[in-house]
Length: 317
Image 1 (tube, one colour):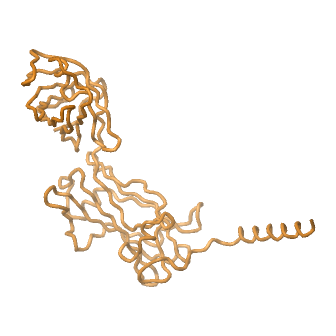
Image 2: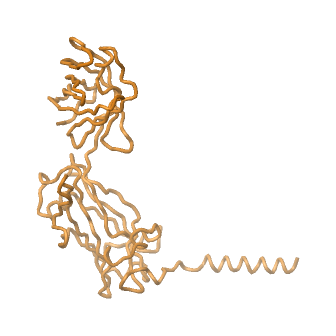
Image 3: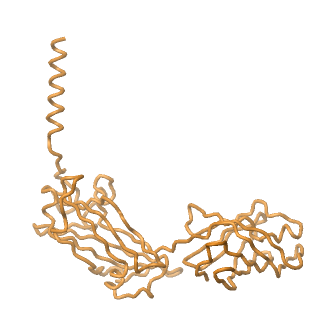
């Protein structure tokens, strides 16, 4: 029993000693050019997208922690650099600046921007880059920006010893490991928030089909359900908007979507027979969205979908 008490006392002493030890920075931070180094741990990503419809109030915002052997005190400056990217169908990626050339400086953080905090011994900073600042730094205007564009932000850490740390000399562990959380590189997408989900009343006319006819105008309701895996896509309850029911068929297991790409509407998917669907917007105002749907079997109809109270149609095309 005496030996057990003695062993337990040693264990408690070890725990007290270990808990009182100061956390240490792993000296061999994996960089290609240095044995010891510094990195910028991403504490929070406050904003990492730009709203296409509200560029004036969009921003790129992070909270960073400077981690090094001096608790962040070796940081001299951190450059925030940016490049603009667009995917052009059938062509590929277009960069501004061009790929293979340097990105442009949009802001420089100073050592004084990194301050103590209550959660860690390492110095931290929070910053915001307004979308308009990034656009201007690139020599562009808001009119040059399109939905689905992206801004590539890159951080360059310069320390007081003249060393430079960025995404090009950090290895995969620094950039991708949750422990380091220091990619030095952030993609900020230009997104177009879409909120077209709901159940709407509709009227349909000018219906044509080789399989049956339905004279005059039909009415009903259509439900547009957001597709979680595809932002801006809405699964609709009936791609023919009641036309098949009118001439004696039924929609059944058909799967057709309406897609909102920054206000440009399209229709995709197929019915239970495999026929594909498309649409052409005729007109849109706050109260009525008018479009012609067409499937690959030649069936078509002119549909007017009415907005709901308190939720007018946005600017669509």
